[in-house]
Length: 356
Image (cartoon, rainbow, N blue to C red; front, side):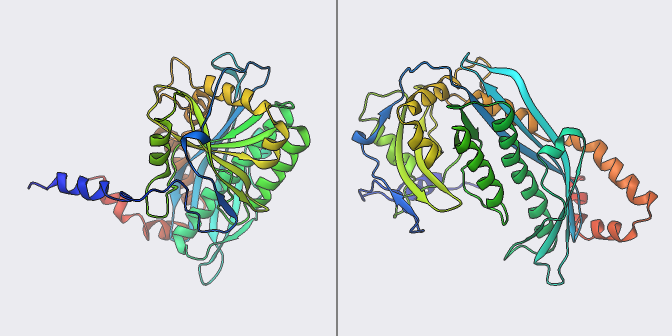
């Protein structure tokens, strides 16, 4: 069967065409948009310093899920980049189990339990935390809460790095925006930002993806790419907005960190740290640009420190094999028939997939 792919491409390419737009469309009035024009771009140029970057990421994989519960193996990690064009060997990796159980009759609330070993207690969220979501129900809610535990742990991992590894003028970079997305997450971000500001450390987030668009649906990275082509900059940064909220107070930029990269990333910097640093921000941006130059970097223009952190925290099927066996063994030894029934209520689809 043949499809008219040219017609499909033509249709998709017309989105936002014929309209001159230079700003992100933000629905929330807490966001202020800045025009993305050639004169607004700032080149990232060499600025040597003794500052450091610390990259933070997290990963998780499902051990088992049932109709009313979910168990995840979670990992978080920080990686230090000291300006020598590669991350140092010093990094912290933490691992814990998060499990959640739906605890309300209307399936609107789930309680979190965390099982930790050794130093993982430094980053794992507190057990007994109760979270509710407006739309998620049943197994979806249990999964959301278990995964939220990993996100909370990422902020706590950043806090560990701030307190144990970092010094004034350094920058902490997360593989995400700085926005708190989950219920209860703001408490973790607020504690981290307050401690970082107290120590003179900048908090930032670099996102691999962004869906920021103009009012008529044109991706803002497309606008930026066209505007950047009118400059001579190989590496650059351009502000696209600012958000003023008690739990999300940040400048929002787009950055291109390598002249040969095809990727433009969303980059957020917490406002207080950005304004306090002044010209020192240029040194951190150059350090961030340096961090992408690594012989093992698989994505040109993306910091190797975040790639390293991702490889440390990624949970593979092989990693899950023994936790799954241990969990099932515990179920049978404890005659937890209800848990087995909960698993069978949702696993038929995945079971059939094995025969494809």
